View 1 (cartoon, rainbow, N blue to C red):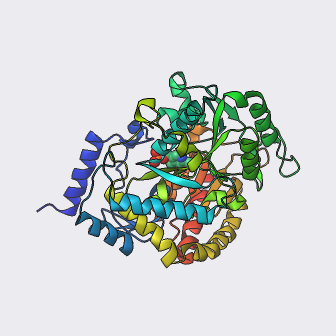
View 2: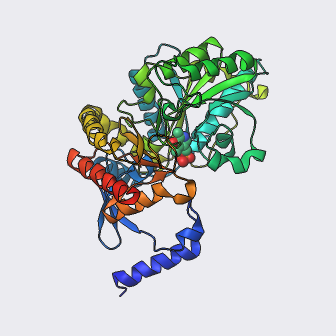
View 3: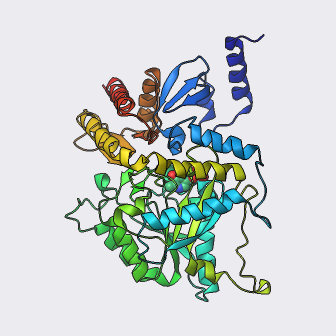
Length: 460
Ligand SMILES: *Cc1c(COP(=O)(O)O)cnc(C)c1O
């Protein structure tokens, strides 16, 4: 008989001996005992000692209807009893086909099909691959159209599109991406709409979208070589929840159309209700040419991603086999049956529970709670769009002087919050709050209260 204590020790030892954690300085990791999660329910996670924590970042932005959601649990169990996986290379299966229709309907219901509507679903298994696929599709599209010069991309400062090399090439977060620069392909980079730290020293709306004007001048100069622009619509997540001012995204769509550049919307983080609408593009009534979805697509259960594109792009790949217009790309677990079954249940719940309706009140409630945090002495900016919120800590509120990276202020605040029963994760000096959409107001209140307390305790 192993006691809980010896089992815990055993897992700790195995972790420290054999695991290499993502985005983690392992030397520091080894210095303290890891938090071991063994169960989840609703907005909560339970550790191996039986202590419950609020899951303040939706298990890294994926959980939608909470943990152990009956309908999703059941959908997966039912699918397991049929088959867990078969390939989409040369075969098909019901969950992949049914989900594809649901995704297309959902997108065209949510987003005005003002430009071409999105009608084709290409599956993969994570956000980075969804982006790789979008980039390769956009590139190959122009090759097929005979406009061979269109082979570069335009992306934004502070962008995050994943960690594979194509996605890193269009990324703009130096601390993550700089190291790999010798391996990357060249892209054009436009300024990010980071109004709190506007690099032109302007403020919105009196700037009249100065950063968009900069973007336009890049397009003007380089449109002949630009295949596509890639953007995280409305919110640049990993850079620290940078929220674009209203009208910015619409401006992007207009410019892409004007200069004949495909628009790729990376809604890996913002999709599935995260910003208060089903998709972030909905806020400004725009339709991208290619849409990338992942994170919330299975409600936070299983790895699945989709790259969805228009008939116009899809049609360019049609031809006799010998023409080699085929899109030669695919991942082994593409469109996994269990993951697709989970995604179907996830989407079904939005309708059944009117998730987006009940979310609106919670978004307002969160805003009200966050207003108190704004007043804290070391809080420079609080940004929120829907259920994505970021609290930017500063050393000096007046000068906006940031804490030096090595101070690890964000990290310290999150550790303190953990002591009080809340799991959150920082992005540098930004504390992220991104709870499951199913969280209750009561839980939301504790989440923000404990976060505020942790900020106060750590920053003095
Ligand atoms: C998380 C994220 C990705 C990468 O997704 P993975 O599943 O981690 O590969 C891409 N784009 C955005 C906007 C993201 O937030």
